Length: 416
Image 1: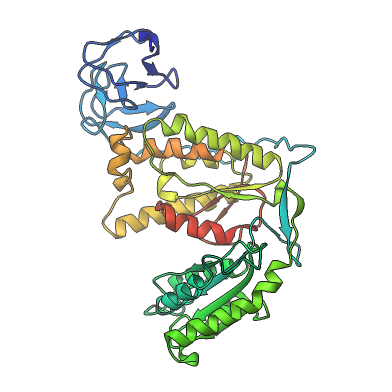
Image 2 (image 1 turned 45 degrees about the vertical axis):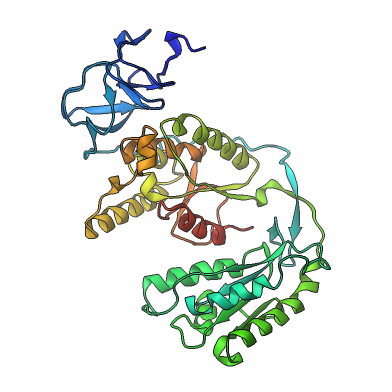
């Protein structure tokens, strides 16, 4: 049973708030804080431990999470009713916290698949890519043909998977959107977890197969095949032709054997989901500890979701191995500031309603918890969306805060 001394969590002596460990009712005395709770405070929410005048910054983690929108009395619930965003200067202190990484002398191993070119895979799939939304249906139809027991004769093949999207036409063939799409598709086409890849187009789309392959330096071969619907003559014929091409790849894909390989071949992508007032002191730091361990074994971890590190980016620039790396991160932050201003939005559109119900008030507060997923090792590089990740260690990739889109950019960037 909780005692009065353990009803709340104080994260730093300088904090203006403590976190409720359970639902607190008005009149509850918080031992150790010399504060009496005023009103009902849900679990995971914040209680002021000192008087905070209107306009003053409010600290959690010894970092600013917002500004008092009115006078806040000790013991008062601190949330949307009295805490708001505000501009303030961050001290980027590029590289101030860089320290040598204590690598493990004998790194861990796992049973991986070593491809002919030396890349290492954790899975063994055949991938189906659509160049345009118009070929998405047939790509999914091809994959459906290999469900159930269709792969029983190929025990080393983990599956045939379709990766589709809603783009690829009605867009500037030389614009940033097309470059991003091709970079993403190119990364999937080269992914080590695909033993073979089939790319299916319509034939008249903006994202032509030939242009995609030229931009991404891809070359067709026995395990990288392409064709278009307009060349085969309709949906049914296209699916049948695609199925036949996959069947040609299956015997080659099945000829693999797993072997012990170093953990340095592992790349992990990090995401947030279902965040609340506890995430930044429980799940996120636990992930950060796992990231530190992976990095010490020579592996790579990718932190992303730029709108969800906003207000905490200065904690990452302090770990940047060079000013140039830190400036790359700030450049992406400024892009998002300009984007939200142009679209008449704001960075504080996040947290979501569910995040707020769980105790997170501003994006500043959410971000400070989110960056804990990145552990404590050096920030070795910063990448744009779906760029190939070449560095080993802890890196950052610029993505939206929407998890499915963020992960879609992380996966093709990894080496495995």
